[in-house]
Image (cartoon, rainbow, N blue to C red):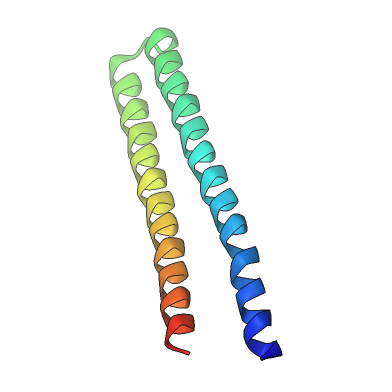
Length: 92
């Protein structure tokens, strides 16, 4: 019985941690988005050469999309892992 109690306590302790990590990740994504948008605005207002400006904006936008996709995938993976753990614990 003690083993089951430990698993229940561990599960209860993991859920707030996962929730906190998810909130932190969401905040990080939001902050990165703001910074990258400000960078694009600065590029538009300061870079004089049209070709350099367009290419630089393209690079920043591609980086932003890649970062967003990576972080979304990491978030999805952590949610799926949590569901898998919960499912396997329920089977026990």
